Every structure is written in C-alpha cells, then in structure tokens.
Length: 279
Length: 309
Image (tube, rainbow over all chains, first blue to last red; front, side):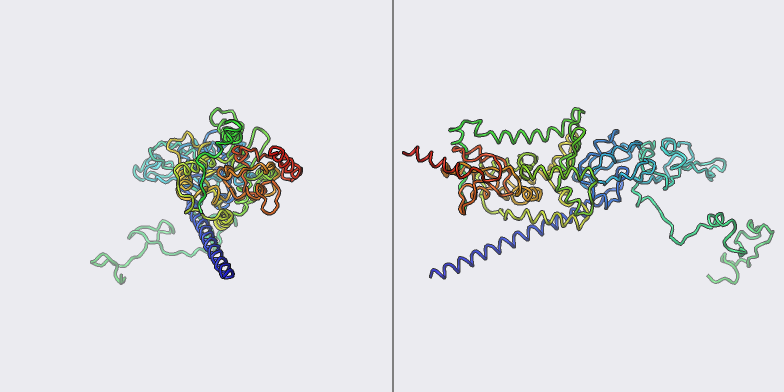
C-alpha cells in the first residue's frame, strides 16, 4: 500500500516535472523565435536613415553597436539621433536624416571618438574619407539646374566642392542656345554628409543621400573603358579599326568616314520599307 | 497550493521599530534608483555633464567608462569584440557586481524595477490569483541562452530589440522631450500588465535574461543578506511576502540541511526589504563568510532562554 503510494507520488512528480520542463522549453523556444523575428525586422533600416561617419557595414554595425547613444551625445550639431522603438532603424542605434540636419563633418570626428565598441571605426581619421552614403540626383525633372536655371546650391554647399559634386556643362537642346550645368556626384569622393540634400531649395529635395548599396551602380568586372585603356597604352588596343558602313539618312554624307562616301540604300517600297528586306 | 499574502507585511516591524527603521532599505533603494536615473538626466537637462550615454555604456566625468557586461556578451555573440574603452568599462562593471551582488543592478539601478514592484503591489491589493501564469523561474536562464543564440544567429544584439530596461532608459534620457515618444512606452506598459495580470513577478523573476545574467554573477558576490539572528524568527512570514525571490530565504533562515545563515543564492537581489519588514531584526547586510555565526546563534538562544526564565 505504502509502496503503491510512493509509486504514484513518484509518477505525479515525474508528470509535474515533465509538464514544467515542456512548458519551460516551449517558452524559451518562443522567446528565441520572437527575438529572431525581431532581429530580421530591425535589420530593415529605411533608406533615409544614414549612419554616422565611420560606421561599419550595416550587418557588422548591428553586431557591434551597444545602443548607448554616446556618439549622439558628443555630436556638437545635434545631427545624430537615437532610434526609438518603431522608428525604423534598430531601436537605440544612431542615425541622421540629411534633409533635417546634415553631418557637418567635424575634423575631429567626435562621434567616432565617443564610440566604446568599434561600431564606429576609429580607423577613420580623415572625415573627407567618410562613407556615410552617397548623394544622388533623383529629381531629373525637378532639379532647377536640369531645367536650365543656375541654382547650383547643392554644388556650392558641398564641403568637397568640385570634387564630390561638379557641374557638368551640357547643351540645352530645348533652347538650342544655352548650356545646362548638371550637378553630378562623384561617388568615390562623396562622403554622404547630406549638406546638398539639406540645402536643396525645392519643397522635396532633388538630390538625396542614400545608403551606398542603394546609390552606387557598378559595371561588370570584365568591362574595360576603351578610351581609358587607349590612354594607358598610348594607342588603340585593336589594330586596324574595322570600318563598318554607318547608317544615316538617304543621300547623306557619312560624318565618320569623312570620305564623301554615300551610303547606298535599296529603293523604298510602298509600305515604307526597303526593297529586298523582309521584316 | 496558494499561500496567503498579508495585505500589509511589515506592519509589526513598523509597530516595534518605527516607520523609518521599517522602510530604511526601501527608501534607500528608491533613492538610488532615482539618483541613477538623475545622473543620466542632468546632462541633457542642464548641459552640465556628469554621465554621458545610457546604462548600456556610459562615460562618467572625465575618467570612468562603464559598459553593461551583458551588452558586451550579446555583442560578442553577434560577432564583435568591443573597443578597448568599452571592454574596460565592461570589466569594471563585472568586477563591481561580482563584489556587491549581480542582482543589485535589478533592485537598485534598473528602471523597470519600480514598474514591476508597483505591478506586484497592485496585484496583491486587487487579489489577482497567485498561480496560473506562473512558469518556472528557471525559464529566464533559457531566455538568456535564447537571447545569446538569437544574437549569434541574426548578427545583432537580439535582446536589445525588445529589452524594456534600455528601451525605457533611452526613452527617458534621449527622448523625454520628443513629442509623442516611441513605442518604448508600449513595451513598458506590456511589462506592467504582464506582471499585473499574467504572471506573478513574471518579468523580473521569470523572464528577464539581464537579471538571469546578473544572477549568475551574484553567486560569487561578497555582499550578502544574512539571517544572523534567525533564532529570533517568529515565523510571521513577512519576509517571504515582500521578497521578490522568496525561494532564496529558507536555506538561510531555516537551514533545513544545516546551511549557514547567509543567503547564498545568486537570485537574491540584495534589495534589503526583508531586513526592513522583520520585527525581530533577524536579517542584516554582511559578508558571505559564516564567521561568528555559531556564537551569534548561541547568544540569541541564550538570550531567549534567559528571557524565558
């Protein structure tokens, strides 16, 4: 009898232990899954949130930053802010919105000096070498210079004027008489400070700083720029340029050959095509 | 199963020792919590900087870097080694809590503690059933492992995505004057409601991996609550009623297996409330080593005998 009691007690204890263990394991698994999900969501930083100078690549940055806010405290221009929960960037991480307050590019880089984790890389000693993002002229239809005016504000405020932003003269096809000075960003020089975006006079900035991976195009590794290679070598890479017939208007002299050769085209058909050509 | 909780534990201590003596450590603790928040707020409010940063990592005056070692651990799990000043800061904090008891962070510093304490008091006042949502207290150690595993898997400081402690402290220190604020307050409200309605002492006592981490540190701490005068205990149960981790008391107070009078569990938060509410002055703060214990026990017993005769 006593033996039976002890056995059933043991069974009850075992059952209770199992129930508790299962509950505990389930809760821990739930916590882990939830945190994993939250991690994925938090990794989706909005494009307008620009990291401080010296910030590691976003993945490495999120691993390193302990969300202490010391970079924000030591920013003398109140450029940097700390992401609150739900602001988009991972809660507690520093960022700035160029249109609101751009980076003033302090030579001492106090934000980097304040970082206790290395999330802002102390290897960055020259602020001109910072890569916070890249400015992109997004408003080709709204930019006043593109419209033919001489606004030039983005170019004028650029701390690396004539390096990071240049004005490229282009013929104004509309007026046939003027030049358009197109603000052009040079990605290898642009630090992403955002002064151009902050200064853009339009109600919605025509030039915007974007994270580098969104802003930069890249040609294939195998591409060679013919003119660059030619300059390097001192002569054309291909010997004896093959002279292919240029297509032009009927009866027009070829501008390329300059030889006065007339391009012979077949007679026109009634439908507007050329004799002997099947569409 | 359910034990009754006295509506007013400590009433006897107030009657015997006076209100101040019976609230000494509680007042000290609330003051400390306010001071630890205030030193972070002085800078942003007045422009005179004592401490820059947050509980995650800070710089005090011109010389003292401090970093939360649990942050450092998460960062390490995510694949990053702290810079020198951050590492030094983590080391300083680690050593400090190894000396005074890891969970003193929970009861004397953490800004969530007043929230969960309030939730518990309301819970008792409203008579919310004690059992139901109570999962094992050891789950927090699982959450600790899960947080570090999730940090390693996602490459970010996983607990920091939801950690109400740092969320609310950042909100207070950085976002106090931002109209509307962020969702951090929703998380704090969530913790409050969780503790109030779902699980008794649920967040700090069962879930929080920060507390679990500091609890592990606390196992080796020197500063302890001791039940030196345990012979005087009259089994009023007031200490159990106020203790956020009631399981830590019996080994020291009742010594079922001959344990010393020192509370040695790392889960003890060194809040000192048991010292406050005991009308017999059984508890006191002291070292961890059971030095003159036997003599003290004897002395108390002798005293009682003398009184009885």
